Picture 1: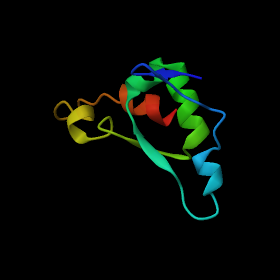
Picture 2 (picture 1 turned 90 degrees about the vertical axis):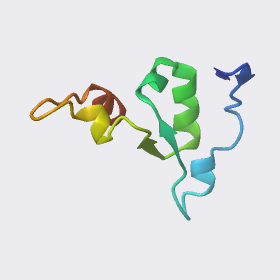
Picture 3 (picture 1 turned 45 degrees about the horizontal axis):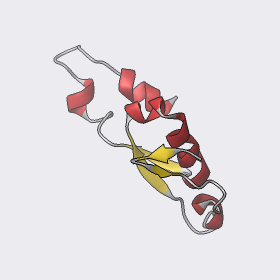
Length: 79
């Protein structure tokens, strides 16, 4: 079990993504900083089979001028 805002993740509950895998994907947003919380990542892997990078892949977070790019946060999510 992990903790989030004083709550614990009950990973003994059935996985949402496994329950509905025949019908559709279950996803959530993720931030690069979320990877600093191993319990949160365990919960994501248990319940979700799809993620969306909240803002890490938007131009304002990647492009810093002509020819100046920084993909660190985007790469962290993709990896």
